[in-house]
Structures are given as C-alpha cells and as structure tokens.
Length: 239
Length: 281
Image (cartoon, rainbow over all chains, first blue to last red; front, top):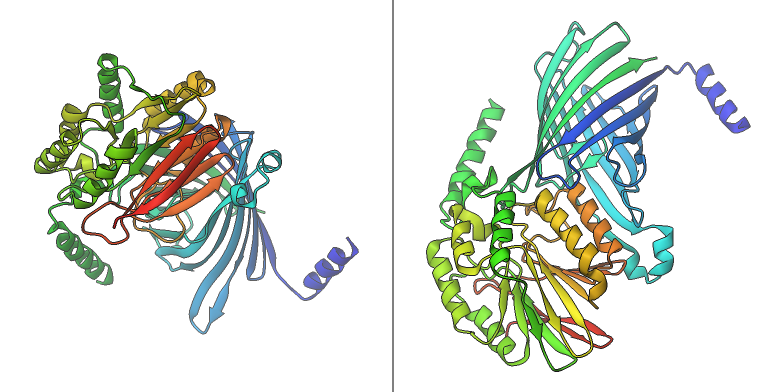
C-alpha cells in the first residue's frame, strides 16, 4: 500500500494527466440456431488513463440464460499510445477469463495494434484461446495432455468506418464495421460479424450508444446459416 | 481510391475462385436447406427407419472412420472400404463425402452399393450441400443426424452422427443430442460422436469452425456425459486433442487428389478403446 501511495504521489507530482471512464453496456443476443434461445448480459467496463497508457478492466454478468454462473467473463487490458513524428498507433494487450462451464474454463490472451484516424478505427492482432479443466476436473483427469486444449494462433481484426470525423462537434456519430470480436466474444477469423453503431453525446462527459451486430454460422467455405443478432446499448461516462 | 482498388482486387480473386466448378459461391451467404429443415427431414426419416443395432458375437470389433472423400474419383476410399469389408463392423463418413453435384452423388451411391455387406454411415459436410443438393443426399441415404449402436456379448456402444454442414448444429439438433445423451448414455459403454466440423485447430486457418457460443455448450455436454471420442474432418488436416474424458480427432482427407490421405481405425473391446490413423498405401 505504501508503495502504491509513493507511485501515485510520484505520478501526481510529475505532472501526469489522469482521466477515468466508466462504461455500461447491456446487450441481448438472439438467433434461431442458438444453443440457448437468447442471452441478455450486462457489461461493466472501467477505464483509467494516465498520460498515454490506458488500463481497462471489464466484467460481464449474465442477466438472462447464463452459460454457467452469473459471472460470464472478466477482462484486463492495457493500451499504450505511441507517437513517432506524425504517426500514431496504440499497441494493446489483453487477458480474458470465461468460466463458461462448471467443468471447463476459457482463457484468451490478446495482443494487437489499434490505428485511429478521423474516419477509421482499424485493429489487427492475434488471440490465443485456451480451454482448460476446472480444478475439480483436473483432479479427476490428472493427465497433463487431458487438462487443456491450446489454440495459439487466431487472427483478430476490427475495421470500422465513422461517417462523421472523430473530432467533430461531438453531437452524434455513426459507423459501420466488420470484426470477429465484440467486447467479451471472440469468434474465429472466418466467422466475421457485420455491425453498425450510433452514439450521441448527452453532455461533455457522457454519451449513449446503440449497436447491432449480425452473426452467421459458417460463411467461408461453408453453407452459411443465420445464427444471431446482437443488440447493444450503453452509457459512457468520463469522470 | 485505395478502397476501390481493394474491392476490385477482391472481386477478381472471387471470380478466379469461381472458375472452380466445385465451389458454390452462394453458400458463402446462405444455405438453401437450413440445418433446421434438414434436421426436421432427418427426424421424419427416422420415424420410418428406426436406429440400427449391429449385433456381433465377438467382444472386440473395429469401426473405420473417414472424411472428405470428395467423390469424384474413389480410389483411396475404395482402398479403405476394401479393408473395412474384411475386418470392420461398419464405416462412418464424417461429411464432404462427395462434391454436391448430382453426378458425384451417382458415383457415391454406386460405391456404397459395391459393399452390400458393410454398413456405411454418413453425414453431410458443406460440399455435400453445395448447389442446393441436400435432397440428393436425403433421397439416397436418408437422415444426416441419427444414432446407431453396436452390441457385443459384453456391452453395447453408442455412435451418434451429427449434421454440421452449415457451420452449426442448430438449436433443435443440439436439443436432440442433449436428450439422447441424457436418456441413453448410461445404457452404453462408450459413446463416439461423428460430425463434419472440427472442434479445435492449432494454427491460422481459412476454414470455418463452429461458433464459440455453440462450442461452449457442446464441450460442456461432452464433459457432463463423458463422451469418449469426437471424430471430424473438414480441415483436411490431422489434429488430436484431449479434454477431460473426450478424445477429439480430426482426420485428414481421404481424397485421391491430396497427399497424406488417411482414415481412422477405432478398436473397441472389453477395456479397449483405441484408435490409429491408417495412411493410404
């Protein structure tokens, strides 16, 4: 605790700027092929930014049809803004934990790059997905080979076009994009989601958003079948 | 301007791929017969054709599993079937058995008819559904989701065959699978599931898998009911993974035009549940 106070004191005295943001996102996800008819989730995400580094923690709670427990998933992310002459980019790393079954856990490790321009958000990276047995199951199946399955290489992408320039009058903006990732959901690269977002500022510090995503099962090299639609709404609150 | 070039380049690439008459480009966007429709038709078929029970007098037996034969030509699959005909109680094809053309189905049916003494079970992969030709599969071979059993003097084993040709099992098929496992798992010694889509991969791929949300449900189900083995194809690549009680095997293509062709021989007996990849000679 003392060390933390020293670090905080040092940062404050060094003239760093810090901002914080709180985000809530509530979403439902439905489709005719779903294992569970539909899901309703509440995401809570906290961001804390010190100078060029942003620390993000997120939790997803099941409101309806939980996979396993009410706690669906948890996430930690660090993003750092890098500027070299006129070129700016944000490398990021992330970890997610999802106890989707009483027997199995999913762990996801992510690294990537985010490039923001006035009209585009472009992300590219890799995520590793590891399915591992819960502690109880590991005792039942102690063989190392049976305790986990590791998928090291998965492409992560997110391409989003903003119809109004990012640094506009901060009233309303909307966008279209394609990605295989949405907050706590990581799909294989070959199952993209098309999405549209719309957000509007309530005041200088708060804005609300609405987002919809279209999911198929299959698509590349498959007979694609409709899978689901995700509807999201939420509030961003800069503190 | 850059975006326009990218779109034009993508269109040219798509056209180049389209020159391959084995690809059904419409399938990138939709399935003519959805998995729900196919499942309903399969259930109707099963009402007229109750599940097969293969009764054998030996306590140990072999089942051959194969995938992605893409018939066309059938030299390699014949090599496997010739052997199966002498020493296996059945063979199971995990989808993409043909290329979806009516002529491919004709060749496949003729091949199956050449082995009247060998039960050959099959399900659909994406290629079998191309060109809207699911009715060709259905009219010749019947259901794409079903189960059968093998009974020895010692115990019985359950084999479940699932249709994942559209990239998903669909809600109804998943419910059916859950009901089968819940009602019957305790009656059988070993349970083996065969479907086209592979569950795991180790490396980047341009091939589609199951949506993760569906995978979560299936993995949970396999753990709950201690499914012993899941065999699939689709990637034309060999993967072997174990998670708890379940051995996941992705078998290479048994396709004349590809190298590294193989099939899987599963040996089951009293205290024996063992598999081996058998390369084509």
